[in-house]
Length: 240
Image (cartoon, rainbow, N blue to C red; front, side, top):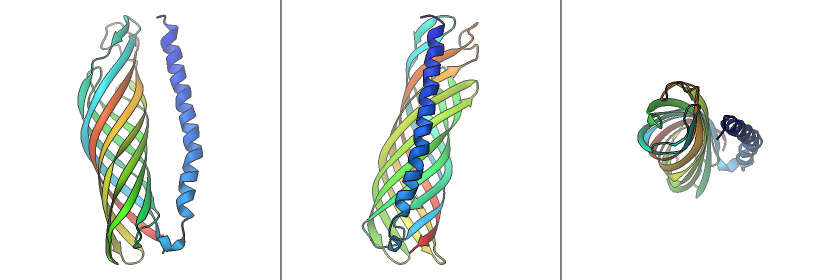
């Protein structure tokens, strides 16, 4: 492999990243508008959320290329993972006694890997879009509970400790939530999710380590994550 091939691969990755961002820019307004088209009786809620979670990642390395020794294999590793995040949340059926509700989260999340391929600890930031499809278990004037599947999409593009990391992730799982309805159209919500995620991406390291004399190291990777997430949200009920 010659020196131009890794550079071409990185350029292709940047094109893919730009394409993904442009598509997100088109999709997000639609996702925001559709829930707002719900009937007023559905008790739409808009608010903010905070979340935290922990789990483990099985990191599988692909082909690595360095400016010194060319292609090598990357060692697979298992790492602890920690997550914290915040953002905006919208719910289409917050305080009504109806069977189904849809909840959308848009936010920024920081996560930590204890052991990334190459022996590094990384603290990274990613964009997160989470979709909850809830089915009501019980509902009263004061509180309601629900359970349902959760779909989570992530886009990673960050630089930490000399390493550029890009990736796209998809997670599925099960969520259980409780809504506490307060006076003055306010609702406090608690949710617990159990998730499994597939994340695929590439990294580019401009450090000379781990190979003396190397000017850069690039590699592909995939991660299989299992984690538990706790989310607290505070809503303003804007239509009920």
